[in-house]
Amino acid sequence: MKCWALAAVTLATEGKSLSGDLPPVSLTFAGDQLVYPMRMSRGAKDSQYVTIYVLADHRVRRTDPTARQGRLFTNYADRVRPDLVQSGDLKRLSAGSPWLTAFSQTLNRPAQQVRSDFTFAPADHDTPLVSYTYTDEYFIPIDVAVLLLVLLSTAIGGVVLLVRRQRSN
Image (cartoon, rainbow, N blue to C red; front, side, top):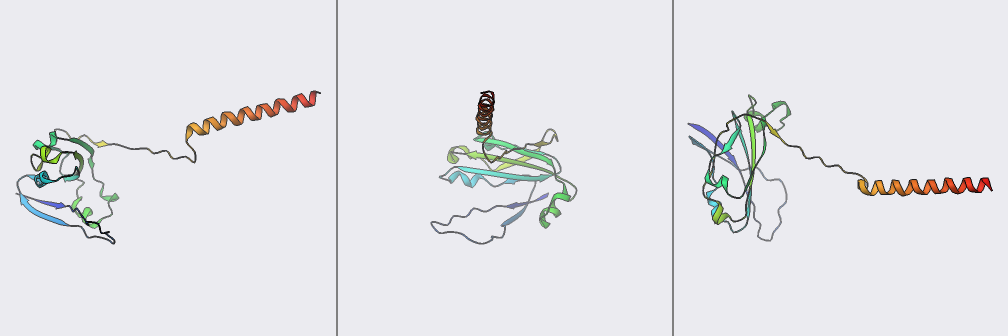
């Protein structure tokens, strides 16, 4: 028997605002299978966007019927480097460098798409998946900079030609 831990919370203020830090909500239960209780979202009226982080001995894959519904992505899969972890709880959980697998799924019609809780099993391979997003931020967009450079070069060339003509006269 394995012991699983779940931390999740959704806050709805019904027109009021939230302020201040909120402590994490944690739920722990014993079981023979890794399960994320999602079936209750079948009653949701709005789209559901779910991100799941799984720490395990190996990379994991989704095995439930809901995995074939909506848009499911494996966002990340690699061993955790405890030396980079800052949270005390996460340091404790990541002792031994387990695999972290991150999934995200969008379910636009939860009443039709949510067919089960999410379940997980070891993946067929422990191949890392690390994607990077590069954001280049410049003072001005690169295409505008190139255009300005061309215009400036043309203006300087025109001034040089004008000065040469005046000197030759």
